Amino acid sequence: MWARVKTETKKGKRKWRVGDFLAAERCSPAVLDFLRTTYIGRAAPPVEENWDSNEEEEQRAAAMAGVMGEEEESAE
Picture 1 (cartoon, rainbow, N blue to C red):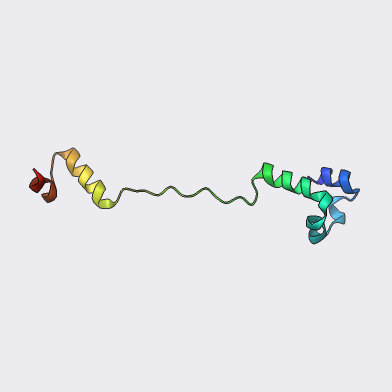
Picture 2 (picture 1 turned 120 degrees about the vertical axis):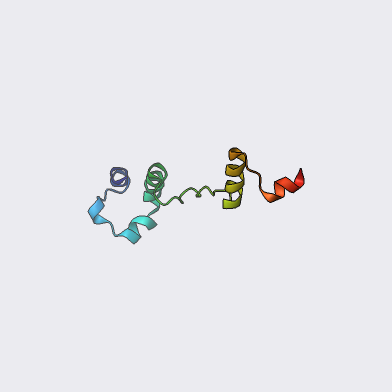
């Protein structure tokens, strides 16, 4: 990024103040490419939720063990 900025503006990394650097239109393509290729500033992917409640897990475990709950017995 800095090599590209220096090529475009003839100013090296140490010659820029942050606000001036980010406001300079000639620097925008280099900054945007840097952000795109490094993934800096991107939101983290959403955390995958576990849709199984504890009750469902208990029912599944009971079914695998051959034990039926009260609701299942009355349904038969």
